[in-house]
Length: 362
Ligand code: PEP
Ligand code: MN
Image (cartoon, rainbow, N blue to C red; front, top):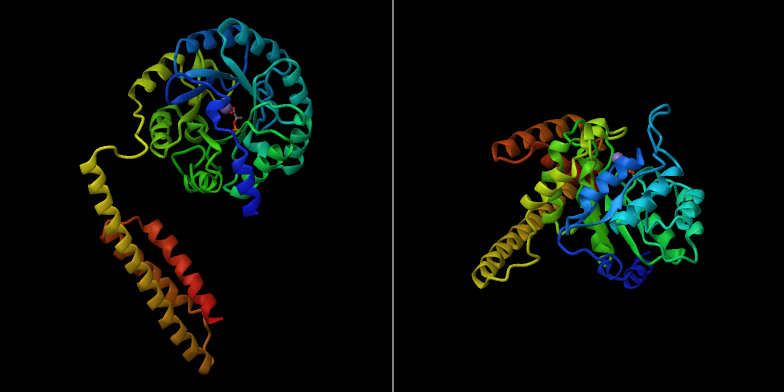
């Protein structure tokens, strides 16, 4: 699999060869849904003046969780996307969820297609879309699947690549979860980071609107994305968010977007200043030393585990001692919190350590 991904990575052109923006961060903006020609054109015209915005988004076929909610305007939206293109020279993008959508978009000159989170989870549908794209060089943006699984995201990217498409980017829009959280979709940044490690040439776009679910969080999520080196954001923008027929709470006006763009910081990839470079190198060396200590301590812990495992085996004692594990966990979480660490984080670390310790004794 790694060899296949390496080849895919080698063949991806840099996003700047097929998407031209004037200023960082690059912004894809527009409403969650196309609602009327007037809404589309007034939003697009208000966005078109920004050097950051070169692509206009609008969903025309909307995947909604429940029926009888607004499911998009359908084919007529293609005409409105054409009007946006003619009147503003913005590129256009919309979501495709089956082969028919792809055909209609290609026929109507939609510049870029995106695959939504509810589609990325379904390899049959992704394959159908990939087959419909064969022989074209349409750019495709692939959102992460709804559930926090990298494999499905990679699989969708591979299917589109195997159809001959090379202008591919991935959109991180967060992951659905039962856990209570301030986010509509939790970011789990480690997943897009792992995607970037496996496919460093693949452009990553962040969609702070669907991660946040509420406009009050969009700016901080956008800044987090920029701080992680992501250079392109897809932000839902509506001329009258309160009246939006879908995702009304998470949409901002073009004016609010412009103000937010003034406040966002674009970080440097690496320090240029000599003194700062030295300071960072010094701290990195200290961090590496601490990591070495942690590894040594874990190795020592596992040796003790092996000894206790042998003793239990010799005397026919059960490996898993639930009471001991429970009190250990409680104790570690308390200690961690006293040291200013997040209890949940330490719990996750020790769950991994304990699982390995139990396995070693079996
Ligand atoms: C959208 O972009 O409007 C959308 C439906 O997104 P997602 O697939 O991320 O839910
Ligand atoms: Mn939306």
